[in-house]
Length: 141
Image (cartoon, rainbow, N blue to C red; front, side, top):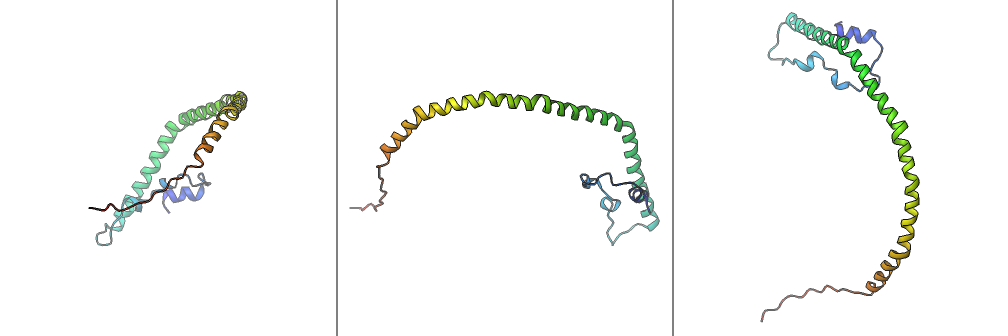
């Protein structure tokens, strides 16, 4: 059993929704040897162990160095966005709907008094227009 399988088998599932499925890159996904040419089994196992150890080591070092700082920054950003949405954007949107309701009633009154009769009159004027498209061949004399 290799190191990655051992860690996955002993740890809880930290990606239950499978958000990072594209990051699960196995050695065989990167180094693919065709059946015609193959390295000896000991070389293959050695390079596989080096590959998996390098991935885990790099991930662990970067997580230790940057994980805490990035978690703090992400917490600040998510907390700030939550605050802005809850205390600024949502109340502003609801407050703007109050005068818009009044303006909507005024606009409806203007349309009903001025535009509806105009458009109805235009509709009545053009309702009796009939257009016939008859095509005739042009006769040469």
